[in-house]
Image (cartoon, rainbow, N blue to C red; front, side, top):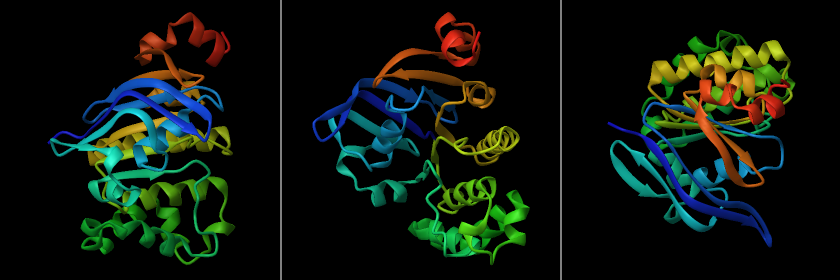
Length: 242
């Protein structure tokens, strides 16, 4: 059954400051789509619109879960999570004084996931063995890369159909970024996830993305496959240093 994201002419603002200016895009079933652009251009706002954390001022935002369409504008963030949409937020947003295991258990709040807590916990510890070793360590005492593992594993605890990932490379060393991007690709393949990932690092993002959209000042300016974007002169100049 299909799981998609469908956005049509959406606009969003923070107070009187308009951030998104009529964005239309889709993430097809089982696709990984990268949302590319520098800071301040609206990538995170777009991700938050899908998660229900920022309300639209115009347009239509929908998700298809198991072939059924849902209007996100009518749903709370909790209801969106319960549908099967999980978010890995920028900056990880862990509970630093709680242990790794406690942070993961908080991810299992979705009713469906509550019945599979131990199974999902074992899966996450299998994917990230280091987290199993440090299950009782406070999350705030871990390195940035380890905290990103916790944030990603926490999202998996919800048993998502659609995964939203906001800037997974922020604050991480290049080798850790490479490892994290590869892990996202592995998890997507294993779980059959539909993934929308906001990322500044063009080279790393397009290693695993099927398609990408470049957002500039709240508008989609360029879109295409990884090959098409990599050969685009504007993308090569602005994001690849060519």
